[in-house]
Image (cartoon, rainbow, N blue to C red; front, side):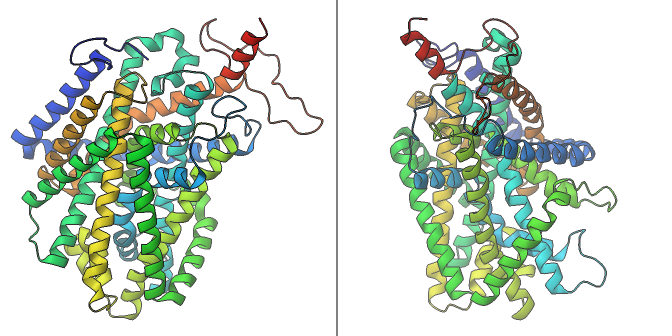
Length: 543
């Protein structure tokens, strides 16, 4: 572990990094409380200034990560294991998928699965002249799949695989800086390594705060629709406090108990919600539109991955693709480290297949059923969802449920969805606090409980400040801006991983070489150690 304090209030943590991170968050909170309007204006202006650059930079980076991950999962290194060659996965496949999906997109997909298809149905640059509403509906689903599909999971999977590889294959601490060891050698132990990890913490904190803010707004809307509780800032702050209290308790109990059990619980609740929508919704339409939109998404995946909106003009690219890619990037240190933490023992092929395809498939089904039901109501039942979304975007899910005409079941279903939102918020928050403290402790996968509690409080405060400073627009602007510095670290991580993999064996087939060409690899003698299994084999042989 890197520079852990042995005594005092920062015992078990990197005192310097922890102090800087705490001061950074406190400064943000103070600015948001005492200079609310000024803070919101500054964040908005910074986003507007960055948008022209991010409209092509984020697109290019995410497209590269997608193709890079496909190559890692299918190319010469596909049999490299995240651990020693004889290691087996720590968690079952079901538990693994449950945890990575719950931590990755659970809250966001609940918020946007209805709102995004409806908003894209009304406004996107891909609807051609003379297109019908039915055509627009398929395009809206295609764009929703794109922003929640394989491209976003390529970001998460890259960061997760890279961190897991250096931690479990090379016995390095589970931190972002470890991936830069092939480039910087022992300099990662100093100020530069601290800066890299602080950028990861910075992106993580704002990514989680954005998600918590969206989820709390949606819970507030649900409570208003079901129980008549008036939408208010006070209620949102109360919900934030309650969510973070439960999340902190669960994360203190550890990954194998609290986080795993909560993740599996809301995974089962999500499956129940999917079957509910399929059975009680317009079943034939939902199956048909999901299949058709999936084919449309696959057919258009390559052009969408490189679309920069350069010839269309307007703000669509900045409001949608730039926001979502920034959100995924800001979340990537947090979700990537969490995925790495639960993926020990899996091969590159297993990892890439699981992290890219399984959550994407689940996401397509979820948006197909929830978004498809909302579009069906607009196309064939007189609508109402569009108007509700434009009045209050956070109410979209509950307005759609009311439009299904379920009678006395309507409040029951809406209440269960409120509970599901709450459990997803809890799993996202507790995974986030665990990851932040892991980074600040120098890679300790079981950081001190006191600091986990402290960061739970900080996340609640920052979420509250961003909500007070302007709601959804400020949340979006903050996460896009916070993701930019870490995106530069992602580029460096890719370079470091490629250099490290040159020492790995090929994924050999019959008649092929099993070892990489005898080309020297290292920036210094002590840049990185041999893979753990080879080192242990040499030790046992007396070499």
